[in-house]
Length: 437
Image (cartoon, rainbow, N blue to C red; front, side, top):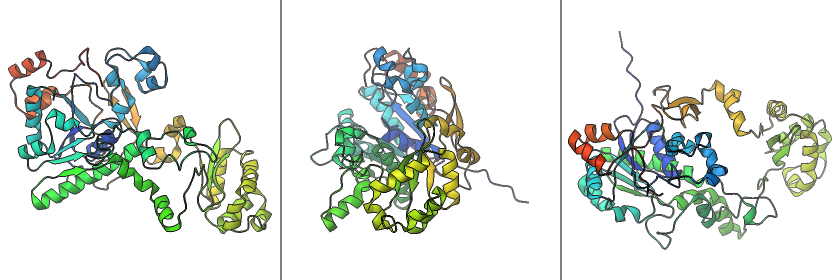
């Protein structure tokens, strides 16, 4: 008789220290935590993590505006940093330890954690680790098996090394902003979507796992360096190669495609209801025309093949929208998909939680947070046959929640020493009054 072995997560037993901030860093450490790594978020009570907030006391005018929407009930009272939706999502399954790296005592505690860690991930500005005395040269001497990941906005070398980077600035400097937006609009009308952040985080999670495999072979750790901007420039690679091969530059595409037509988003019946539609071939266009009750459009010389349709999009799109605007988006999605036409509703955020497909696949996972309560989180990025069915092992931590577990347990410091560190504000569970991001 065989006994089924307990399912384990792939990164069980891997300990990761993280100063993973804003969205890029947290998305990467979240993937590692979802895969089973013990991720310890290294914070400070003297500096608010930019993933938790921007100010020690949130101004009411900000809490009443768009910025306040990320906090539970727009509550800016003490402890608001534990009610941040972005932190609570991306830091799920993490532990929080607060050590003041600007102090000798805090730095020594951190060095002790480095000795016990497999990975250290950080995406601060390029000069931060040097200023704090926790450079790769220093940490690799303490632990030669350590894998350290550094991924500021523009990397740790080159003319832009010390430039500050956020999603909008990185999208701009790598040429992405010039490609997105409404046709015939200038870049001031192009909203930032910050997709370079989670893209960088996913790259980092992959790089960490590759380095762990390499360490199994060599016994040595290594430095991984990445530029968030360079990681996302691959998303414009078609346009870069097109320019080199054909000397062709592209402007804003709007919702159109470089080769398909019709392609885009079309208004449907109802308030703010839309359908996304893609027609990749003449056969699919014929099926669309049948569904529209206008089969003759498929043989109209303006639309008879891809090249013709592409050249007459200004005439074709109003015909399609005249039909879609008379029907419900959900009905059209199912009707067209049944006919072999790629189509999908443009879902509002609130509707995602009732999407029958996501519900049937068990995509959302309930996580209970001690402050924010029970919330449904997007599930892991992939399902593994031999992994536990619910890999998210816990909520995001409150500030300094795991100080005792980490410092008394992992480092083995005495209770007397722990109390002394609290009195000296080297560690703590509440930000100091002068804390700033």
